[in-house]
Image: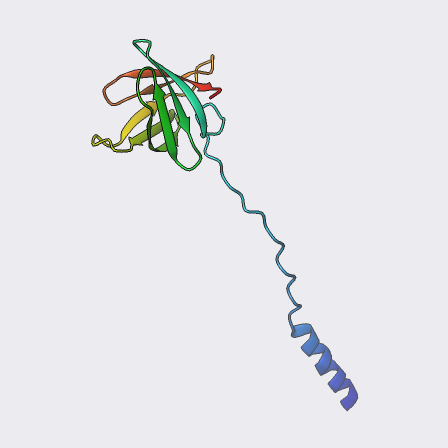
Length: 133
């Protein structure tokens, strides 16, 4: 009988001990790529045309910097941010060495032709499309 009690005690202790948890499986780090209003990656080149026909190319890098090359002007560099919204986005550019500081544009959702608009605080409207570079 003592033997049965000893065996039952060992069995009870074994049942109470927790099984060793399996090691967690390695997970892949998911890196979210910022997206433009057209559904493509935000980093890239964009051609703009203002209401007077002036053309420029914005090149946005993944690190949050930009280069702006406009007709007849020296290139401008700086930093940018983009905040998506339901009705488009807000794009802000802060040129290096510019005392005026950051300028933000209201970005519309794309039209059927794939272009969208960027409106500055003064109401100036740029037509924007993705560029080859």
